[in-house]
Image 1 (cartoon, rainbow, N blue to C red):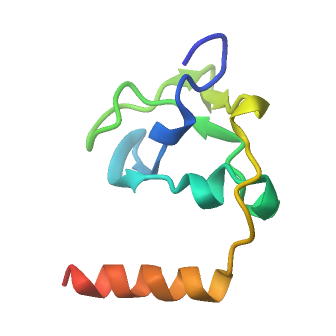
Image 2 (image 1 turned 90 degrees about the vertical axis):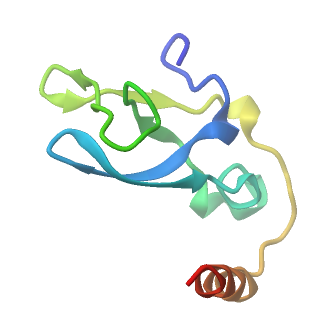
Length: 99
């Protein structure tokens, strides 16, 4: 994070927070959906800040709230139409492939 903005938005991860620590973490976000101006309702705009992107890492507080950082608007690009049904099926197949 630099000046309240994410340095590299392609390195954002989905995570779950329990008791102020990362309790579950996934891979990096998909820029095709999270940084795509053509799929604007799914844009990542701000994130919670943690000490590290690893299980057990502490979430940083700003007073009594989670510290947040925003995505610089220049990170968003027009990356084309997203077929949500097709993407959902791809995700489902990828998850089942690993089990």
